[in-house]
Image (tube, rainbow, N blue to C red; front, side, top):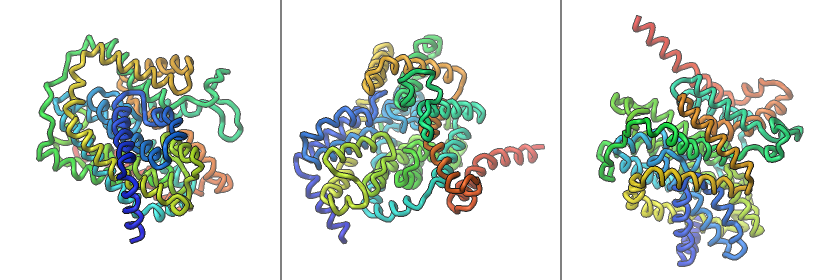
Length: 500
């Protein structure tokens, strides 16, 4: 009852005219930011941080939260229509969503993404409301061995699921791990693989890699090879979901929410793990031969619905460690943490008592923002679909401009631009020779985190790797990793024996 009363008080603050306007502006701006390739929510929130000194604290936090989860809604649009994710969290959506668009089913893909985002975001908000203290308490109990095993699970899942072969997936993953090693060593402070280039001491920005591999590579690939390819774009169907689409999407939404919510509650590396796990789950659970055949060819609607739900559930649930522990789990939540600190507020265990009104108004705004975003996205799907009618030269020029401006805006460094286009050329080569690009980003994001957790785990075990077997949770995760690697090959081997 105390939670219910606190939430009602939060709604009383959040539904004031000024706060509703800030929420609407944040949601609209977040959606636009998500649609634009190369300009993610972290960059948008960072650019707008100066307003925190001039706007009332509750309105400011509601505004930034609107940008935060609005960008996740908008990120699916360009992933589906143009195969250029505006945010790394939308990479999985691009794999099946863009194939659906090319098969004339962009409307269904955009609809299932928007509704799935609403369903997952609302359910995850209920989890934030009811279970934040207990879930955060559980997250505190996880140690370095468990976190390392979670990341190892992500590596194996990405390598096994994506690409035409496991070897290509592993190669792409190790490229990402190598990029993640560039910069200062976390223990010794010595530069690694920097080549006497000062700009590399801080490492390579994930935004540069994501934008280079997807947006810039998409443009360069179109320039180099598009003219030689037969246009495969079919006429777009009416923007709606059939009964069969609903039947296939609803279970995927719920499964994605179940997968994404726990990953948001623990500081284990953002949305990449749950979205890839959700995609792998949907691909494995597809029983209908027709649905199985759509994966990687015409585009399977489950491959859009599940990852989008997992993405938004993770993003919303990530507020739990931020608000209750003061631990950001992504670049954007780290900037949100800075916004809190600009007001002299330190998120942590005492926040729900010292700034209860602010916290509950922020949580109430999540419910309001999800409804606003559904209204902004679902009826306007037809407007986003019309982007495909823009002539390709102008469209790709716009993508390149937005990508370049977004990358340059981070540090105003000309070196970053050279690096951006170098990574873009790498993306062209990978696409040309059928190497999956998503594992590069996953390896780069999780590589440094996995290294740190591995070092901490070995220290806890006093130099012995047995620490991973002595803790039940890490042992269970290790069994899952081995199952992901061994079971598919065992099934294939048994199938060949039966065929003989």
